[in-house]
Length: 397
Image (tube, rainbow, N blue to C red; front, side, top):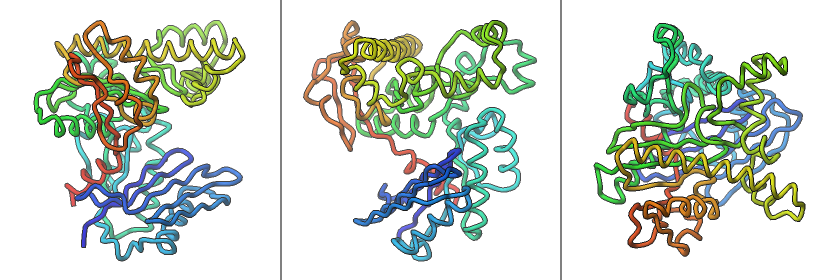
């Protein structure tokens, strides 16, 4: 019987999950619980050809996971018969403590809690998911897989801020990155497909959260997210790079508190702040609107988004002394044909040539979208963080 791993990704008001066979890379079942703690929650569970949706109040993560386990019993597959060898938990912030997956014990839980100050929106719900999973599945090893682990060994020139060294060390201020599980998975897939161990790669993980990475061979050399996921690219609701003095200005001139500025920059900015919606598909629809003002705001948002991408690609190319492959991944990267075209058009100056027919696809499997003769290969590689988490969890059990 094949070994399986139950992968759990707990958000502040949601839980994504998959039952994965790591050996063949297949998700036997998957689902999503949304709107936990709201008046009406939603649970979607898929197994084989069956899909079930529940709409009901879901008070907390404990009730959510109990409902999930009930659906495994009712719809399948039965967990008692699934040969689960581990539960893998996605943890956003591992700080300086974790350079790989970790079996969860009291010490690991304590460190994840300590690091919540660096990921207040992510680590606390992940801890709740761990607590509930350990309670409901007490005999199965629980493994933490950290988004920051892949970037643990960034060279000092990329990891350090030019901040007073004593202050930085005392308060653990450095660049940790995020989405590392995805960047590691995608860059490894590219190397496998192209048969190259020494490739210079730029990976663009573009979803509601977005990040770029520079990867030389198997090693991460730089990444766009920093102490927190706020730094770097323009995102759905986050500013990305911004002059830090904006914080002081808003406090002094607008009278905003630290918490208010935090909410502004993390939840009310990015595409939402520029165009009024954090969904790239909605911004594209706005750009096709008949309303001139709506269309102009959408175009400006797209231009800012794309310009930031191009700046990072240029910077990372210079930093690595060249680039062999640029790869788009995650929801926007895998599906927004127009975005990929516009970015590649901006890169024509160093020889990128787009294959329009290839780019017009929304692939389930990795594809090359650059034309023959392009000086840089451009690819679309669907990410699979759940499979990556399952494989990492399996190494410890």
